[in-house]
Amino acid sequence: MLRIIKPTLVLLLICSFAHTQKVNSFEGIDASQVHSSDHDVDPNGAVGTKQYMEWTNVYFQAYDKQSPNAPVWSAPQPGTLPFQNNNLPNCTSVGGDGIVTFDHLASRWIIAVRSSPGSNSYYYCVAISNTDDLRSSSLSWYTYQFALNPVLGANSNGHVYWPDWPKFGTWADAYYVSFDLNDVDRNYLQIGVVVCALDRTNMLTGSQPNPMQCFSDPNPIPAHGTLYLKHSLIPADIEGVVAPPAGRNEYLVSIQNPPFDRKTTTSKVINLWDLHLDWANPTNSTFSNSALPVTPYIQGCYNLSNPFNTFCIPEISTTQTKNYVDSVGDRLMPRFAYRNFGTYESFLVSHTVQTAATKKQTGIRWYELRGSGTPAIYQSGTVNPPSYYKLFRFMPSVAQDSAGNAAVGYNVSGWTIHPGIRASVWNLEKQTAPVELGLFSGGGDEENAKNWGDYTSMTVDPVDDCTFWYLAQYFAQNETGSQTNWNTRIANFKRSTCVPKK
Image (spheres, rainbow, N blue to C red):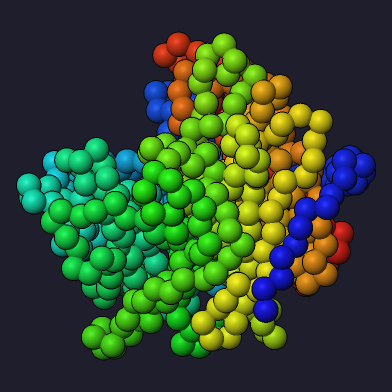
């Protein structure tokens, strides 16, 4: 049964909640720490049993969970470090879209990143810690390099498709990673997707993994593909310490962009992908797709002439610079957070949608899927509380605590407000209205580039199974000229209705 929750929140409630909800936050990796000239920051992170770990291009750092949240290492570490230390030659040229995550079922840290050691050559590199404590004197990493060229396909010129926007999910039977396929000779046109299952069981012990199992859509991968409208798959990723039922398939979700006919702007479905994995007999593994009907939506900043041009988020400086930052509204956003409550299973995902007919004002759409078989849309809603000014909400990430409280974090910006960081919380079982709280206010604009983040991260503390941890990008001061001075901020909070596990 589909339940639609409509935003009925008033400003008084927002203000009241913001004053009573305790939010802790501290500074994450900043551009000055990594000497980065990259505007494409790709910030993401996860909370573990003892630390919080963050990735930005192309470095990682960890912080103690307790105040004063001291960094684990004296400076952010190069993303190549675990692989160089273990002499993996194909993982010494890592690029963007690196991911750090915490395997809740095994209490291990994971660093995963794409590498291109040579022209027309791609690998996926994964490092798994031998402990949950990043301060341990015995910390080491099991490292793996997976050759991607055989599964990515190539265009008619023989150039391998670029494995863009990889997303990583932890499941009981495997680690799953998805890639967009971009044609490097056609302005990086998206022509399909690939999903691979990695042998989690052996990787956790440092053993030789079974060959990865990979699936594509289209299948076979064409040498001259057309514009692909259901790209950027997000694998389900386990929250909490209760595993999925034995034999449970992995699921992934993606958007369904409208047909590129220069007149259609509205979509009515999202895509659900079902991956059945059989390690013993790979010929029995299957990968299929179905459409899930949802409340009609217009993707955030949708452009009829160029659907991948999603630049419409204004800043205070936009009236002078005419610069709008990227909402990345053409796709669903990580995470696809899974939680097993025993009596039911719940999946959550979110994305940026248009909420106003004029100036493409944006808000956050979320979906909850449930079902012991193939999951279906159970309820959904749009976070777009009223404000005194036109506020654009974008770049969301959603998760759920053990009491059924959902929290979605996101960036905000507007004509009269610098880009900042907020979140909204609500209870899924009681179907309460989302209530917004401020996490951190920005002090400047990105005046010299359109790139913004690419994504953010909301995760739940595995120790108490209640505390939400959220990471996003902001600017402390205006970024102008050729400089890069982006900042990241890590915030945490929890609802009083969630009782920490013992």
